[in-house]
Each structure stands twice: as structure tokens, then as C-alpha cells.
Amino acid sequence: MHTKTFVAVAVGLGLVTLSACGASNGKSDSSSADTRTVTLVSHNSWAASKDVIADFEKRSGYTVKVLEDGDAGSAVNKAILTKDHPQGDVLFGVDNTLLSRALDNGLFQPYRPKGSDLILPQYRADQAKHRVTPIDSGDICVNYDKKYFADRKLAPPATFDDLVKPQYKNLLVTENAATSSPGLGFLLGTAAKYGDQGWQDYWKKLKANGVKVVDGWDVAYNQEFSGSAGGRKAKGDRPLVVSYASSPPVEVIYAEPRPKTAPTGVAYGTCFRQVEYAGLLSNARNPEGGKALLDFLLTKEFQEDMPLNMFVHPVREGAQVPPEFAKYGPSAKEPETMAPGKIADNRDQWVKSWTSLVLK
Image (cartoon, rainbow, N blue to C red; front, top):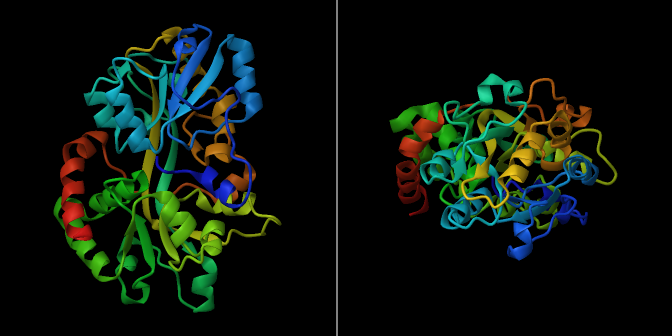
């Protein structure tokens, strides 16, 4: 979602990018038609433990190939353009902000994976047709640089209302809602909070308070934000950034030596709940392999592997998150939410209005 590339943080810290076993990038070729290969198309935040993928390959007899296609928006757009001759069998990473675009364009064929009955009720979608399956959830929220605020003896903002107060002028960087999934999620959070009319007044105040807009998450988080490892290296000067509630664990887990507390915090009154889905592509060359892969994405083994690889929360009942993830990246207790249908009805017009209001 993204670029929800927490993996980019690891790269920024000089660490090796996590990748799926058997993953390869590049154009599909005739070998993709091999019925023993199942191809997953994803945004570039896909990551899974090698042993977990190897376990699936051993049990199922399929080899997993992964094609990464930029952020969530570009991955969905490319899938729509190639839907008659798709690059793969399963698309992972379409989220609730983009779901209607994928469904309206007929990207997926129906399939109800094994384990669907164990998906927590609040994440279920498309229940009548089963074209997509929820895989994970996360919260888009403003993160803050703890040191910046402590040094100035200034309380960090906690809510959307706080962000327009004078003491936070010129401190926030966010992503373009037209080009970035977290940028769009933040816009939808303000629309959920202030209503169909009120969100525009809110953004006028935010603009007057010096919000900075950049194209994507990587630039915002790893270059502009003063609280991240990448941002400190790049001498970023914005102590507030639109990112994820699960960003702080990244700053702990990938740091050497590990700090006792996360250097960044989350303004939980600014969160918008994002859910990611996967589906069997309509013209998949290996639909049986695709079904086996979708079954696997809902297993407890894969669901419990996601938190420390993709920094997202499982959606399966009973799936546990590791202690350091629970400690540093808990979900928002009361995030803003919006029904996919409402997003579908308003998204394009809201983005158009936002663009003319904020960028011009």
C-alpha cells in the first residue's frame, strides 16, 4: 500500500531486503505457464520468511514466483491493463482504498479459500461473491519524532484537531493522495472524521499550517521525517509524518544496537484502518496453484509470519503477533474507518478536490 515499504527502512539502514524464497522479478515468460509454478503479483512491500515459503512449496508441490510492481496503486493499475493476459495467478496487496477499482474492472474470479471462516468479522468483504480475501490490516497514522518534542518540551499532537494548531506549524509531511496509498488513507481518515463537507475546511487549515506534500511514502518517511533512521541520515526536518502505527517497531528491530524504546511515536487520534486483500486473477494460467496459494495466505503459519516481515497485523482468528511487534506497534483502538462502497462513490472526486485545494 504503498509505498508501504518498511523494507525500504531496512535498506536505508544498510540491511538486506527480505524477499520470498523463489521470488524473482522481471517479465513473465513461457515458463510461467508451467503448472508447477504459481505466480504472485504484489506491490513492492511483499516479504515472507524463506522457510515459510519453502514449507508451502514442499507441501503443495508448487514453486512460488513473485513479481513486484511498484506501490499498491501502480500494481492494481498494471493488473487492470493486463487483465486479459495477466502476469500471474494471484494479486496480493489491493487495499480498501482501491478495492472498488479492482472489482469494477473484473480483475478477480470467485474463490473462497480454506480458512475463510476464521477471518475476523470486521475484515470480511465481498461476502456474496468471494472475489477477494482479506489477508492483513494496518493503520495509517501520523508518526512523531519523540526527541524533537522532548527537546522543546512540547507535547506531540494526538488528534487530527491538534495538527492544525499553531504550535505544529510547518512540522507535518504527508504523501500525495493522488499517487500514494498512505496519502489517500490519510485523506479518507479526514473525510471519515469531518464528513463529506467538513474535510475540505480541515485541509484548508492544514495547508495554512504549513503541511508539506511529497509524492510517496519513501520520500516522506525516509527523507523528510526527522525521526526515522533514513530521515536522520538525510537530515530531514519534519518531525511529523503520515506513516503507519507499525512504523515504530521497524525503528527498534532494525537498529543496531536496539534501543529500549522506539524513537518514534504514534498519534493514535489520526489513524485510518487499511485492509489488504488478495484474489485469484480472472485469467490466471494456473488457477489451481493460485487457489493453493490463497489457502496458504490464510494459514496460521503465514499469518503469524507477516508482522515482522511486512509490519502488518493478521486477520485470522487466533493468529498471534510477536512480543516486540505488540509492544511497539499496537493497532489503533478506535481508528477512522469507511465502507469500501463509500470510498468507491467518492474517492475520485475527493482526490480531485484535494488536489486543487492543497497542491494549487
